[in-house]
Image 1: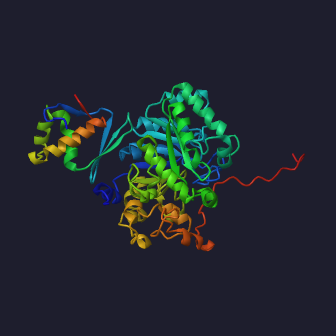
Image 2 (image 1 turned 120 degrees about the vertical axis):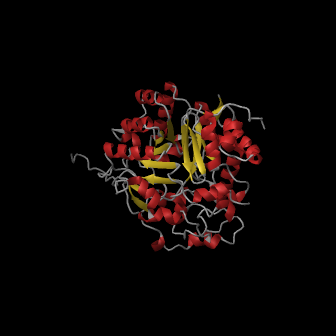
Image 3 (image 1 turned 180 degrees about the horizontal axis):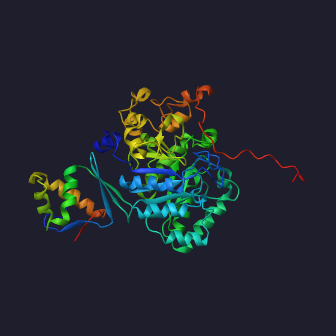
Length: 374
Length: 88
């Protein structure tokens, strides 16, 4: 199986990203145990409204067609609508991820009235019991209420975004049925061991047998389910799943975090994958085009320990972030290699080699209050 | 494949084209489709569609050799399917 010439060219990088994620804030009303960005508290250095608009001006000049806004919970920002409306007016469509807590009837109406806006509501269980273990007590009902409000307002096909875990793999049909009941579109993505997810990944990531279930399910549902091309490591199991079969980090995708730091992808918020800051001289454009990190990622990558594996062309060695945060070498197998090639290595990674997070915005652990102390 | 040489075509008004080293990206703001134009010649032809009465004249004006017309027709046909291009 040969890699298409287009994919080869995309690996060499583009003049501007195709898919840019912008986490607007680290503040969040939830404390999901797998949060990629360890969100919770707002960072005092968060970009101001004016700085955010300057970044959007730059993205418009680069002809970035749309951005994915996330967080934290982006709707926590008081200027959320101002930023989104500014973006759309500049010709940059917005797709944003939310837990739905702030989508009441009025907001649902306001969102419905906007053009070029897509909404993804996160849900990690098809029932409250499964979902709330990961996303917090009450979060299932909150998400469903937001979906109801969007449906009543006539928003149209919003997206339901599911991170696939060991606990919810068996619910894929239920998620699909739920999405269908709203006329919504289902999106399922791969769990990454990033942020707080680094601590919970070993309990949450699907088993190898479940990975085959995911592959079979996606093969059967094809183009009707979105995946962000996040399951390409499963392509070693058979005919390729729809989408670009490659890691886009620093090549076609990147992440801007709430303080303007630019990372190679949304799953590697760590100093080792930080390329620069949008407030640096030359702005985002210079970071994208000239940073040492991104230029390096666009060079041909070594297959390393995977070079002799017959499935390498199909799986491309998997996900860089998944390897990094589990302490595996970047030029070796993915921790969820379907051939099991990482199992021995994974079991023997010394704790000292597993990267420590370079930042954490989690809320402080709650200390039980003493009755009457107030 | 449809015979498109005599068709009068144009880029859909909700589509933006962004030149890239491999050709161009085309994004449709309404149906959210992102499509790759796989050569700079293809971009040249697509951009010139609305200023020529037919696809054939756009191909001639873009100096595409006739032996490549079939492959251009089939690419244009698929761009019509994804609504990047439409009949005017």
